[in-house]
Image 1 (cartoon, rainbow over the protein chains, first blue to last red):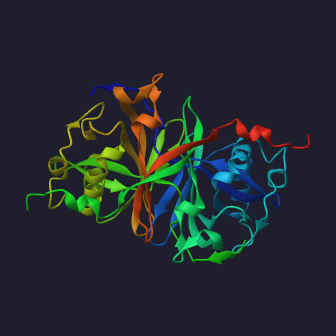
Image 2 (tube, each protein chain N blue to C red):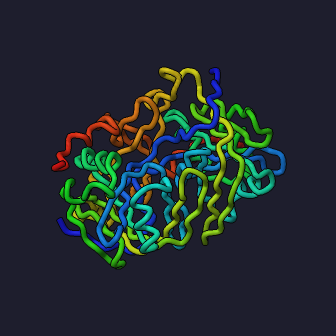
Image 3 (cartoon, each protein chain N blue to C red):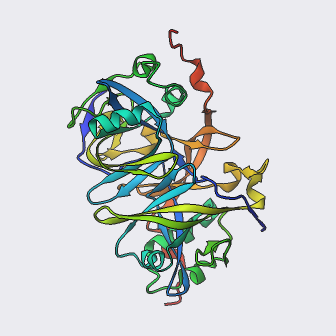
Length: 192
Length: 192
């Protein structure tokens, strides 16, 4: 199996589709972000990479607070719209029909229609080049009651979707169960 | 639709399943990581969260270099094994039958069987609490020739898989195409 060198690329699979929210000049705004991930376990933290010029970043700096909302497949049109338009010109929450609510923090707007919502307080903003890497401490988690199984989010009810970058750029749902985690690997013989 | 507050949780969907590699005391070692994401665009960077006690982190500190390898569904047993065992006790690359190669850097071991491989130089290591957030500049990208379409990785050939946390913890493949990105959102009427 041959390998082709492609130069430095931001190719990672799968990447999530997330809606990052902040109040900008007092009004809720949301942007689509694929470049994010959990950054720490105890305390729980998350990181999202945001281009410096983005309107949402202005609001994150104003409040040192933001939200991460996981959209469900039915919201793909709205999520994509939030990645196409700027809150500087459009009231994206209104156009998308988002029901905005607040939880523990009073400055991290949350989207009711998104099954999972994280409220975050900024702990670091790193300037890495084209983007700011915003690291937030997760202060509270909200889950839609209809998406819970045994008290935890059920991914088959949440129905999140991945963002596929490159020329093929598209959204893809989660698919088949592959294996039990922290389990199937035990089948490998270690010789000990 | 009611919301349930769950306290601070590391619940993000989807999260990737990645194999992070480093040479520890001169020997290639790999660990499974779900907490990672792209951290910057220009220059390309990636972040991975690693518990301080992990053997792989020792190697990342020794070399200030690491790799991120995207396993394919056929490698789920090996990927899970790399999350179960420590390189301090087992030669994981040997047990898994990984063909290890090196690219541009001489200290970031890559797995030939993984369709996508990123070579990274450390630019930051942040102590965030239980974990170190390792931020690396992506120096080179390798893609298996058999997984390319029009010169880019084809996610339907790469066949990456997500890690689903919580009680249900498992791996799930990518599934159905949902919509074209930077496109379907144009259907929303903005009233302007």
